[in-house]
Image 1 (cartoon, each protein chain N blue to C red):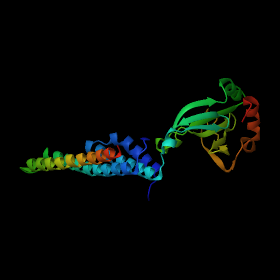
Image 2 (cartoon, each protein chain N blue to C red):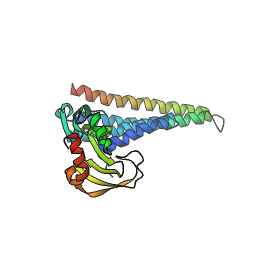
Image 3 (cartoon, rainbow over the protein chains, first blue to last red):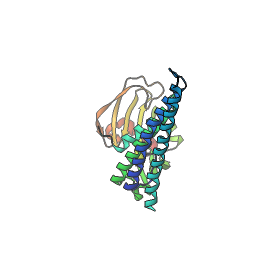
Image 4 (cartoon, each protein chain N blue to C red):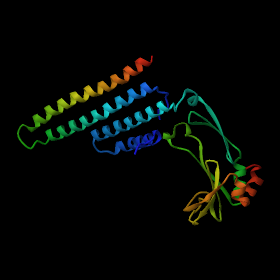
Length: 80
Length: 185
């Protein structure tokens, strides 16, 4: 267990970042689903559609993960 | 139902333990991030309650337990145990058909309470588990005699609702023998 002393502001930032990462993890599940479908297309062109959707989801996933890191970084910077 | 911080940490821990069993990476990732969210929520609750104050985090606490001895914890970690008896005394007790067992608190979610003595069990070769101690109270146990060789704690047993502060009140017979051998209770 992380037994560090957190201020309320740090803990709030950590929770906000964690919520973003949970949201992002749902995108990761979508990416995996699109990639599975792309590898087993049921009609012509579906693979390309799924790959492009997966790429779109991935960029949003990366953006949300970066935002989560930024929230935490800002909170720890403010404490210094 | 709103969970408290300790319950959230316990759920998070279970989720983290189970995550690797999920077959797909995205499911594992989702479980791990949900566990992190639960921990963050627990941290926020603790931070608001001032649960882990600087003093509590570094405080050295000396616990004195009946029979067992002195245990020192620091920030929820057991750092030393001074048993009030040695191998010879344990052998003497076993010679009188009395067996003692104890268990430490092992729950990473319990924070500063981690490392405490959780329970003491006393049993006899004939009757099996007869007494248990927890949270400063002694209770009588009634074994269904299926304890095998785990005389102190094994098998199925039920405990009395009535509890006692001292072991002498709970079981004068056993406590008399123990006192004779250990020189204390």
